[in-house]
Structures are given as structure tokens and as C-alpha cells.
Image (cartoon, rainbow, N blue to C red):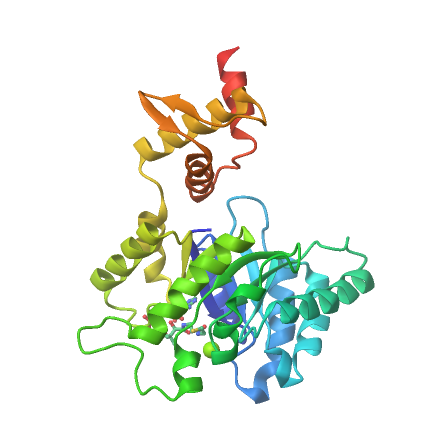
Length: 304
Ligand code: COA
Ligand code: MG
């Protein structure tokens, strides 16, 4: 997923608008963008939107951000929305891998109630919104098959540590926030899931958004969250691999597929390629919206 657009869950108008935004995923929010007095209404609106939305590719994936586990609101969020079968639930203020297991168990209960197969609904987590979550970055891997993306957040972390700003005068994230960003990349790599870059809140400023996207692509993020539909095109363009990079990635995937599971080191265009190149190629294919596992078969079919 290249772009994940946040939409307040108590605004059917924005949800409709977001559906046509071109975002790869929508994050239908039940947390911070919805006031406490509107939580119940928002749950119903989100459930109705998910249940009636067009789900066929290339329609956006639907992710619901629930309220954090310590709010006492999470179970009611899940009871309202899981039966509509969202693609994933986004957990804010995730404190550790144990929280992912806790959420997974709660989702499993609702899946069973709704007659859905266990594991249907995936988990995305915001893992740097609290000091504790940041310090537990190494605990997210290997805890749940549902975990499919890790994202970082800067606004709540600033509040948690008492920082008056998360950026310095030149607009660069300060040390703690750069560490949060780096730990998210590392935890995602360790977990084998997508790393998602945080929102860029200055939503009229496309020039600096593009700079942040380019830096995120360079550093290994597979996508970025958005707060405004106008940000989607910039994000999608930045995270879409260049045609020559995609072509090379497809060649590498095909070579490794042809060499079989024991393939070690191979050569392409006079250069050595090994396992890290294969993983890189898989990432590029995924960013292009392709399934890396299906590609070599496509390549075989093309040759017939
Ligand atoms: N999703 C869908 N539609 C959105 C949208 C979003 N995230 N943000 C704005 N729009 C719509 C507006 O409703 C408006 O539509 P309209 O002309 O049909 O009324 C249009 O896009 C233009 O919006 P604009 O006037 O430029 O912005 P705004 O002042 O209405 O909204 C925000 C600004 C920040 C309130 C809005 O972008 C927003 O709600 N963002 C998401 C916030 C969120 O979910 N935060 C939680 C995670 S950090
Ligand atoms: Mg928040």
C-alpha cells in the first residue's frame, strides 16, 4: 500500500469522498478525529460504509482505526465493525507485541460471532505514539500472523514525552522522532511487514510532502499515511516504482524462481545478486501492486 488516507469515521460525506480519492487504503477513524460524544454514531457509520463499499480491486483496502486498548472503548468498536469485514484494524498507541496478541484475540471473538474465518481481518499498528511503545519496538515481531503493517506517529508521542514540537526550526524531525521513525523501519523489517510513514500535517504544502515521501522511499518505507485527499496523488507518485526498477525487480524474481528454493548467489547483467536483492525486488513488486509470488508464473506463461 502506497497511500493510506485517514477519514473521520463520523463523516459519511468524507468517507464517500475518500473512496474516490485514489488512495490504496482508507483508514476509517474511530479514535482521535471523533469526539467521545460521537463514538457510537461513528461506529455505526463506519460499519455501514464498510459493509456497503465496493471491495473489488482497485477499490481501496478498508482499515478501521479503533480506540486504544486502555480506553475501554475497543471492544465496542470491534463489536460494531468486524462483522462488516474490514481488511484490517489499526491499533493506535500500541505498547508492545503483547497488545497485538491481545487485539488479535479480541478480533477472533468477533470473527467467530460473525461467522468469518479466523484471521480474516489483519492488524496494522501505530507503535511509536507512546514512550513505552517506542522502547518495546523489538517485541512486535513474531507475535501474530495478523500483523501486516507497522506505522509511526509523531503527534501523540510529542504529547507523551512533553515535547513542545516534534520538528526543529528547519522543519527536520528532532532526535526522538527520528528514532521513532527508524525503529519503525527496523521493527517492520524484523516482522516482515510493511513500514508506513507518518502523516504530513501541513496539507497544503505539496513541495515538502514530496520531499518527505522521497526520503521515506529511500529509507525503506512502503507507503505513507495521508490526512487530506489532495495528498494522495503526491504519495502514490513517489511510492510507485520507476518502470526500469520494476522491470529489473521482475527479472530478479524470475531468476530466483527458476533457480529454485536453494538458490544462493546468481548473476544479472554482469552483477552479482543474492538474497537481499531478492527481498528488495519483492518490495518493489509489492509497491507496484503486484504479488511477488505470482510474478514468476506470469513470466513462465509469457514465454509459452
Ligand atoms: N477524507 C475525505 N475527504 C476529505 C478529507 C479526508 N481526510 N479531508 C478533506 N476532505 C474533503 C472535505 O470534506 C472537502 O470536501 P467538500 O468540498 O465536499 O466539503 C474537500 O475535501 C476539501 O477539503 P478542505 O476544505 O481542503 O479541507 P477541510 O478544511 O475541509 O478539512 C481537515 C481539513 C484536516 C479537517 C480534513 O482534511 C480532515 O478531516 N482530515 C482527516 C483528519 C483525521 O482523520 N485525523 C486523524 C489522523 S491524524
Ligand atoms: Mg493520535
